[in-house]
Length: 203
Ligand SMILES: N[C@@H](CCC(=O)N[C@@H](CS)C(=O)NCC(=O)O)C(=O)O
Image 1 (tube, protein in one colour):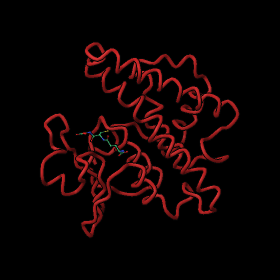
Image 2: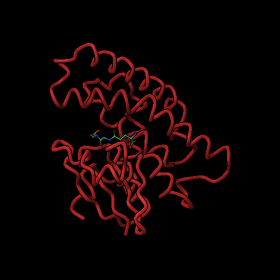
Image 3: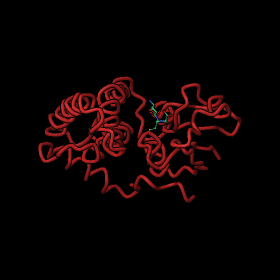
Image 4: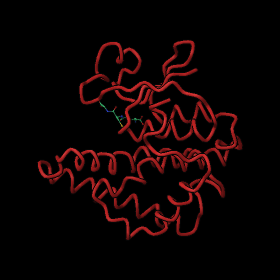
């Protein structure tokens, strides 16, 4: 069984666990204490030179960092990752958008907020909130006319975008301005295989 190095607060790790639930794939989840610097120890840096979770370690010892790369690897051959070139490119388009527009903005604003650092670094926090609101506005325009992210059905694009779009409130953003995003989040949460972010740690 593959091992996932992760932390319960990591929404990047949650993408992988949420996908594992949708695919019915077993994972051995190992918690890395990020506050204690576990991801920067030599043994972990040998698994991911960037010193970040999540990392998926395969049974042959191969280590795969980067949440979206892990998701692509795990979903290969499943209905959640289309094979037709244009369909797959639509999925990748949202995965790139997530890494460039959603994760760095909602993710950092959330981290500043939940650690209380938003008051110490108000300029950084305000800049990230503004960019996060731009990203949410783009999602609002999309979900105003589309039920799902990439195609006319649920794919891994929905999983990766959901991971941080679902914690906008934790970043300090009022989502009342994004009703179509909220409605799409509810569609994701209503799927039978949906699990909450703490899922997998007691497995
Ligand atoms: N682009 C990476 C980002 C990974 C990342 O930022 N991980 C955070 C937790 S969500 C982390 O490990 N932080 C600890 C550190 O940087 O020491 C991905 O999508 O997996």
